[in-house]
Image 1 (cartoon, one colour):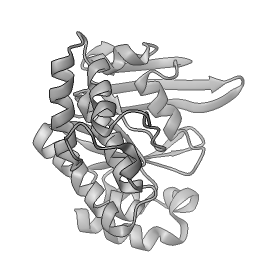
Image 2 (cartoon, helix red, strand yellow):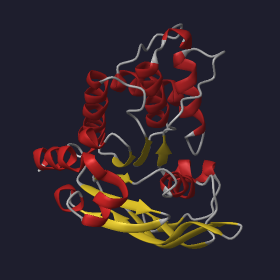
Image 3 (cartoon, rainbow, N blue to C red):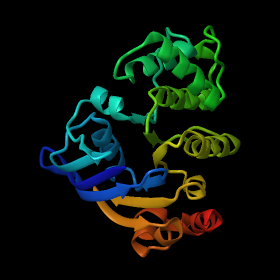
Image 4 (cartoon, rainbow, N blue to C red):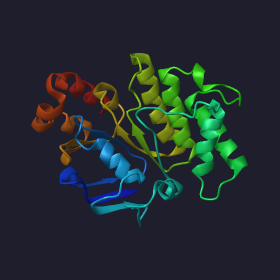
Amino acid sequence: MLEVSGLIKRFGGFPAVSNVSFRVGQGEILGLIGPNGSGKSTIFNLLSGTLTPTAGSIRFLGHEIGGLPPYRIINQGIGRTFQIPRPFKRLTIFENVALAGYYGQGQPSRSKAFEAAERALSMVGLPTDRRSEIGGLGAAGLKKLELAKALATQPKLLLADESLGGLDETEMDQAADMLRRIRAELGITIIWVEHIMGVLMRVVDRVMVLDHGELIAEGLPTDVVGDPRVIEVYLGSDAGAVQAAAAERQ
């Protein structure tokens, strides 16, 4: 579904992403992990069109998308959530999601946007009535709203950016289950950036690890979490617990 080759992004002389290549197959859930500043968000911004690659190729469903603007990429089937939810506070929950659905279409239709909003809200467990206000949502509700907005664009590939941040343990498990359902029921492929390793490792099929913009490990969760370099630069003292979670997934 997605093939990234030799991807480079420099800011001035600083290499935020250095010659990264990877593939994502149809129906996979791929975990993208690494320390802060390792290049995860930059890769998401390159895939979604917020940033233009300095060099390299991004091919989605056989077509080059590197450097295209975000609206063209979302119309081709790549949706994303954001780590920090920023809803339109003057709009209702339904209107926020319908707006995403409207602009996510190649040929906008109000009725189709409303239908997409109802489906997305039902999937994430938020009210589908058109009067519910944003102000009543807590941290978990706002994360669900982010996900609903992305789903309303009807993506084939979902970029999920730290969907567990700010949630308690029960809410984390619910969010992870929701990503599984999205893959199982909607057939959506997912790339998931996350720092909550114990939960992520129980869900993903494969893991990629970045450090200082470089891809340092890639493979099955049980293999990656045992990699000495991954333990050194990222997992540290949490390695044992993360390895147990990865073994549970397998």
